[in-house]
Amino acid sequence: MSSALPADDDLNDDLPVDPTTGQPADQPADAVGATITPYRDGPLIVRGDFRLVDQDGAEIDPGRRTVALCRCGKSGIKPFCDGTHKRSGFSAPSAPSRPRPAAAIRSASREGGRPA
Image (cartoon, rainbow, N blue to C red; front, top):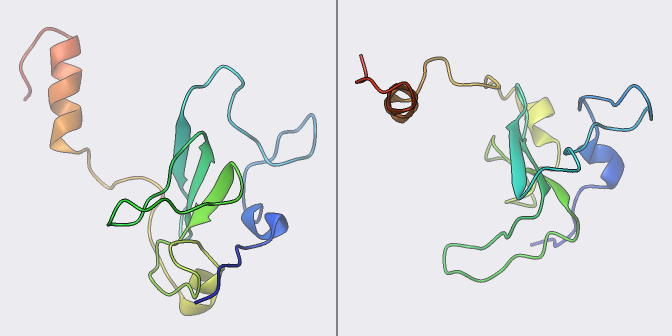
């Protein structure tokens, strides 16, 4: 099993770009913790302070504060993305097609009502 991660340039493919710097948009300076962004037909991009562990609780050192995690299941360097999703025809939306039930409950509790 290879411990190599995708090059920084590989993580930047198809990411939003900050128009002022021309670099990939990063997490806002005032954000706390991690931001996880599912990219359409691609990986999960994790930015910020996070801890990655395997199912036994052993820490996996990502080597950086921004990583791409495989969503297609075909990467040769799981849990990290190696770009295989592009060649395999992986298809997935960026957001759920319908809201999760918990989201409706949280929204209703904020508004002081009951979920529909």
